[in-house]
Amino acid sequence: MTVETFRSLHHDRVPGDPLVLPGPWDAASARAFADAGFPALASPSAGVAAALGYEDGQTPADEMFAAVARIARAVSVPVSADVEGGYGLPPKELVARILDTGAVGCNLEDSDSTTKALKDPRQHADWLAEVRAEAGDRLFVNARVDSFLRGVKDPGEAIARARLYVAAGADCVYPFAVPPEQLPLLREEIEGPINVAPLPGSPPVAELGRLGATRITFGPGLHQKAMAAVRKIAEELRG
Image (cartoon, rainbow, N blue to C red; front, side, top):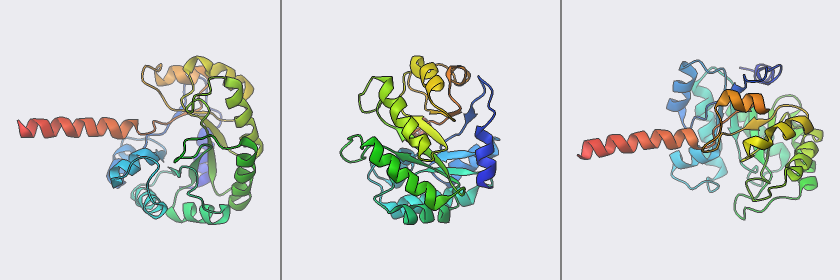
């Protein structure tokens, strides 16, 4: 499936009907979600890391790209890949490696996965602009905004970062860990699609859509639920 198909899924969404993108962590889970009728998928770095035996943020780039390629090959729907902060790769190489997996989109975050520090937003925007220049229209770029995640409660910081990233060419912004009550403000102040991941206690998906979410992804949440089911099976077998 093409990036044009994936991009079109984000536009003209009506309030209360966000695009829901389950997060597969391997080929089998990708097939399960695709067979259920979801029009596209978005792999989570943390879920893939766990499936490969790594802590989040510690997956070697080669293994992450290989895992994404297996996911993309397993399904006929568009796949977006969470490639964290880009693994220190130059934009040209990063774009080439993402496209080589068969993915049509990517998440790129604005905090360091090792130090957890927020990146300088203008420098990050400049880097995103280079990624966009290399990718052209071949890649849907979802720019993650980590200010809420890193403890900055002021929504103005998230809005300022998001605006810079949109101006740099991001197709969508992803204010990770945004409090649901602040979504209407972000929707009013940010141009273009907004990605939201439900938090524990978050409103239902449709309500998040009414509050301003264009699309819903789940981070590692679905993998964690699956592993909870596996642990239950293991306990039953052990018993």
